[in-house]
Image: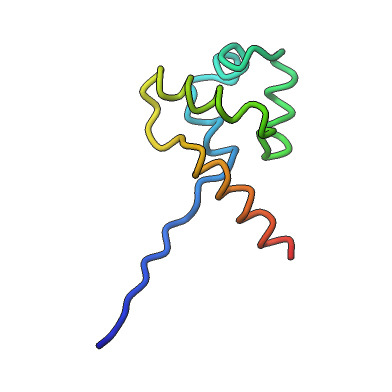
Length: 83
């Protein structure tokens, strides 16, 4: 019996940030200066202390697919690629 495994591309933290209509709205939702949000996007990393807020605000805005699991998987994938 053949087994098939479907690999879906994982969402990155930049993908998560880009779900917002603008970087300004993302910054406002997180309660950080625009420059901080811009640095997160540039680094491709949302610090873990913001994850709960990111998920809550994404849910409030009906942004689909933003979960703690997605944020953690993005970090794991980044670490795996670096190894």
